[in-house]
Length: 100
Image: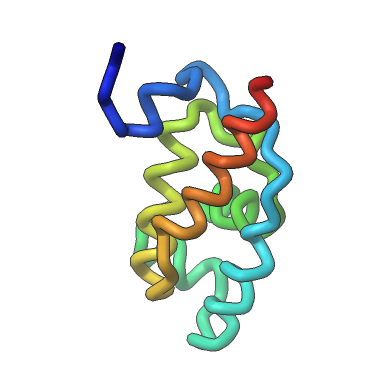
C-alpha cells in the first residue's frame, strides 16, 4: 500500500484533465484588487499571458501537462497572495471525483 500523500502522483501527467472548478473569478478579483493588468502580471511572474488568461477563465485544458497548470497556478497565487493550497485542493478534489 502506497502512503505517498503527494496528489500529483495520483493524477495522469500527459494533459491537464477536464476540470469544472471555478477558480478564475477568484484569481481575476484578486488581480483587480491589486490593480494589475494581465500584461503586468505576465512580465513580473514570467508566466505567459495566454496561460494567465486560461487560469482566469477556467480553461485548464489549454495547459500541455498538469505540471504546468500546478506550477503556473502556484506562482500566480503567490503573486496575488491567494491561498494556493485551498485552490489546488478544489481542483484536485474535482479531478479525483471525476476519475470515477
